[in-house]
Amino acid sequence: MKTIAILGTGGVGQTFALKFASLGYEVMIGTRNVAEKLASIEKDGYGNPPFSEWYAANRKSVKLGTFAEAAAFGETILNATMGGSSIQVLNLAGANNLAGKILIDVANPLDFSKGMPPSLLTELSNTNSLGEEIQKSFPDVKVVKTLNTMWCGLMVNPGMINNGDHTNFICGNDAGAKSNVKEILKSFGWAEKNILDLGEISAARGTEAVLPVWLRIWGATQNGAFNLKVVS
Image (cartoon, rainbow, N blue to C red; front, side):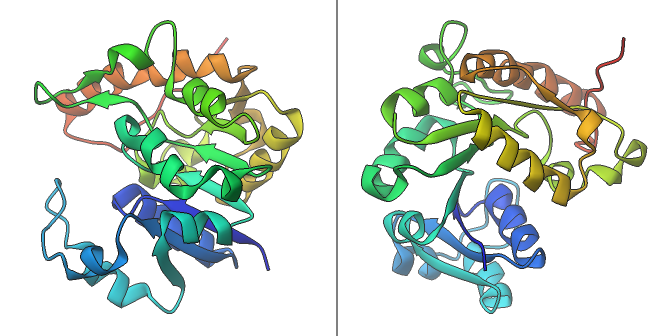
């Protein structure tokens, strides 16, 4: 059975964990401190129930461990952490546990220091990106950036809008890794024609830069169930 590690226990991580479990994967979701995470009764920033409640309802299909335990467990890694802390989290996961594996990066380097809507972190935008920073920091990892330009509900269920006919971008330095990730995307319901390969990992500068526009659209419509479609 295929195994996957989801790094990050927020709504995005939870969404992916349940999707992969439904597809027959063994799933472990990673956090900094398991005992503290299970003891927390705080709702998340969107008012959703605490992680402990979600995990109690889904523990039969999703394992829970530290970042290092999850990274060691998964044949594939998915980064669903806050972009500003992703490098720190991956260091906690351990380079040895990540080496040689595909890391699907769906995170964005958002800066919430001045409130909403967030901007992009200066050091991870324009001439750099989170995707590139992960690849530079962990050269033995096959980083594939994808799905970061939309709401997590659409990431795993593109058929929710326009019969699934909208665009998902993908980029990364390793062609084989991108091919493997494309097969995962197809299992989510993404059609081949709607997966647009932008090339190597520096293309993450462009896809991460979509987020300021995405956030403004979300603010204007109060609806996250939308996406971009490239037409020509």
